[in-house]
Each structure stands twice: as structure tokens, then as C-alpha cells.
Image 1 (cartoon, rainbow, N blue to C red):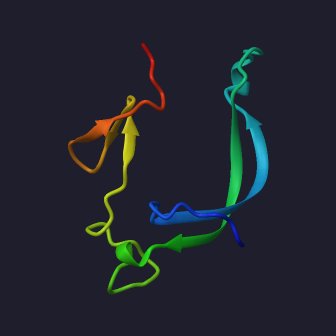
Image 2: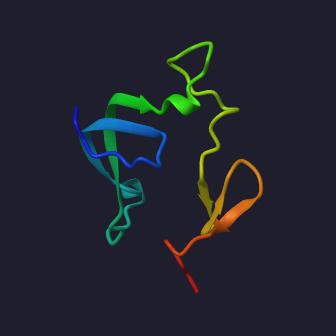
Length: 90
């Protein structure tokens, strides 16, 4: 599976499309235009800098500090890292 990868991202997942599902379709609300995508992960690439020394098929959580977006702000595994302009809501 050859796909362009972002060099700053230590984890890459290669996936195949399985299905598309209407979001909240069971509510009967017809004007919801959101969907969820079902994917099958086919391949995982981990940068060597985050791989466990004991098990090369696992991420070492002490080596990887993922960036998490919560309520429009970026966090690591602790304090806020920096603000985001990706999803600004007044």
C-alpha cells in the first residue's frame, strides 16, 4: 500500500472502505446529513521513535505524546499545548 505520509505524523493507518452509515438514522430525523464511514485497517506504520523496545509491534506510551483536540484546543497527555484555528466557533 503506497500512500503519501506526513513526516510529522508518527502513526499512519492504511485502510480500505467497507461501508457508509447514516448517522442517527434510527432517530427517524430525516434532515441529518452526517454519516459514519466504516473502514478496515490493512496496514499500520509506526515511526521507530515511538516503538516499544521490548515489542516492535507495540507503541511505547512513554515515547509517544499524541496531540488531542478537545473543545477546539490542542492537548498532549496533560496541559494545553496551543490553541487551534481548525474549528473556530464563536
